[in-house]
Length: 67
Image (cartoon, rainbow, N blue to C red; front, side, top):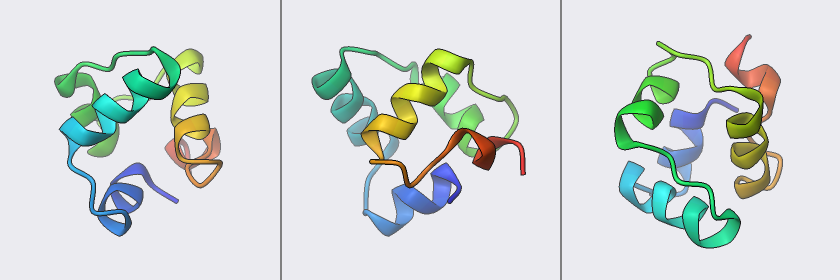
């Protein structure tokens, strides 16, 4: 599942997703960086991919950024 689809399906804004990530994992995404991941302009680094995978409970996987 793409990150944009996950946010839409869960009615989350980028700000809410960033806050959830910081609260649950301690990792803070910049809004601009997250936006680029959503628009598929930039591919997250391994650490960010692992955080996204964890926070989405495996729904958004690293392969989703490549396929």
